[in-house]
Length: 341
Image (cartoon, rainbow, N blue to C red; front, side, top):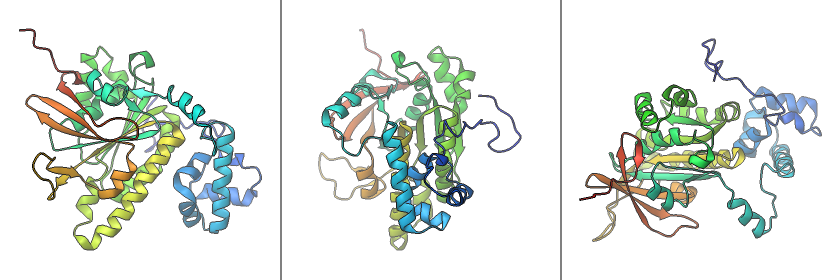
């Protein structure tokens, strides 16, 4: 990356319209309408897909009928060029494609096995647990691992780290990089950090993330954490409905980003007490209610086990409910050391 300080985003060189699938590719639309969409920030077909027809109509002022038409045209175009799945696809085709899907190593073979090979692209992987269970350590380790070549557990790409709790530490990236025999400066140079200070700021960052993903070859999007700002701003039962609506919109935007850009998404989540928990059950559950429960592709609960940690697959469309033992060291997330005595 070639960095400068001319403006907030001047350090990132945007791709050409062709590379970013410019909205100009919808050649059947009137020039006036295309200009209207560009003026409110819809520069590429991926922008249209990620934001959705309602947001398209709200921001541009066009009718919902026109918005739905543009949205469907954008989907059809991306289907035709293979960026998105065809609306009717044989299951064998999907099966063959999933065998080639990209994955990012967590740094631990045990953890990778739990995930079926690592953090999956085109999906949302959510990890939740109490403080000190390794959520942020996993995020930092994944920032390093994603930059490795495929044969070494990476995707040869960068990471976009959306930090809502002021937990990102470049010093930790340096330590993990050195422990894994990587150049820390090169590793840090391929991590883009965005600090969010409110829920609305977090949503703004997400809405502007596509061009960073495109221009910086981002293969991993991290939210650490996804829900903390909403929990601090929307207090009490009176604001619960609005909070859940905002969260619902957020996680669906994140999923569309994952699928449209074909990247991996790693979310950390907080926990809250579970009053219905009984003997032998986990005494805490993930925050966010059914919104997060239904939106995350893979849901993993982390807990302490003496000096090690345990990751439990709580929800997955294709993995059994199982556990994996891992530890946290100089190299980040890793397998526990074997006792040779």
